[in-house]
Image (cartoon, rainbow, N blue to C red; front, side, top):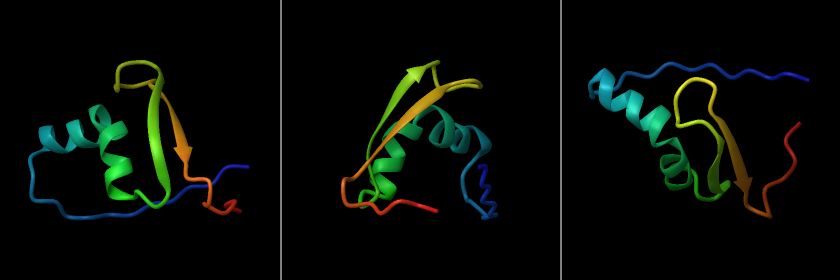
Length: 66
């Protein structure tokens, strides 16, 4: 089963800073943005670029998503 979520937002930072936050620093940014859902993000494979595999560790009290 595949699910997709799309959204758009205007940001007031340069493309380089946005790429760094969303690709290279994602494992640090996500637990700060949504600490009630994500406990930790780990690199499984890769360096943050294309093809990188991340493991998201959710909090124990997060309900199953359907």
